[in-house]
Amino acid sequence: MRVITGIARGRKLVAPDGLDVRPTADKVKEGIFSAIQFQIEDAYVLDLFAGSGQMGIEALSRGAKRAVFVDNSPRSISCVNENLRNTGLARHAEVITRDSYDYIKMTGQKFDLIILDPPYRHSHINNLLPIAAKKLAKGGCIICEYEKEALLPETPDGLVIRKTYRYGKINVTIYVDPVPDEEEEE
Image (cartoon, rainbow, N blue to C red; front, side):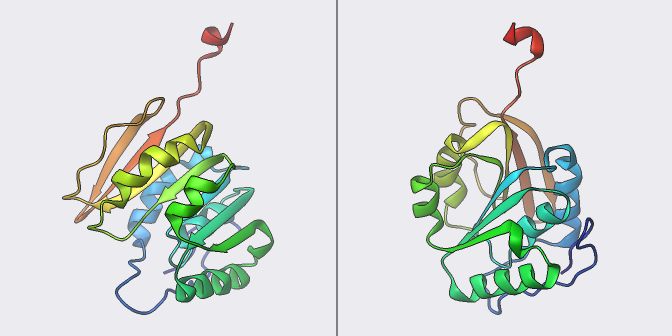
């Protein structure tokens, strides 16, 4: 596992041991970031269920302004902190040891990019997507990574599905808050 591109390109990342964390494969990560490449610069990022922090770190490496990493596992938080130090990106990050549900419900912050990559087979995407949609900044996007058998909830009001990608047993759906056309604003 490594940072694919940007200022921390090629840096190796560590992940917690055990079956609780399922790091996103480089091929999947590259596909996700290619799809959202124009939405990363200066973005404020939320990486829920951060695990190793690789998704938020990739966003920082590609020009995101700030990233908040949330996980309730001390092992995961330790890896996130180690990866941020090793990539030199710690000054752009906030790492929070907390339940992802508690954090997303309680934060008053809006984010340009929200990454939802929770443990599979627990309906987390169904429960979190409507809440996350309320924390999304105008023009922002939500990345949902989930097992292909999972059924997604209805698209939250105000969001549209940009695309769903399939990578073997994994699906990734990108939801966006479309920015109104300039003509509509007049």
